[in-house]
Length: 156
Image (cartoon, rainbow, N blue to C red; front, side):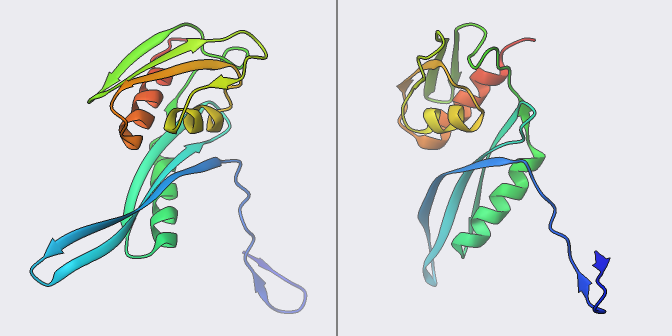
């Protein structure tokens, strides 16, 4: 907060170097004795620019509130990932619930060969050359969590 020469207070916006990606916004309904209660679920992936990634979901009555809350909570749950020359150091196979994921290093210029939630997570984390494959579940959240688990499993 700073005082301007005209006598008014100005609030300085804090610049953030976070890179975020909205994976999904879903309408979810809970049936109660009062009827159906509609809410929105936001799924966000956040990268801090220093090698840490997080995935978080949040539900709210408004879309904007769900996105904002998912963002703030994701900032608190960042996990470290390893990037070597734009790719992963070695092949990794990870299972998270019913989702199984394989992440494999690729040569320079290959690009990100992945689909769906895996591709978005890898793009947000600034990987440039990766081969990835999912097996089993098609659930968006479980596949994204499995991808983050695979990326954080590499030792430095």
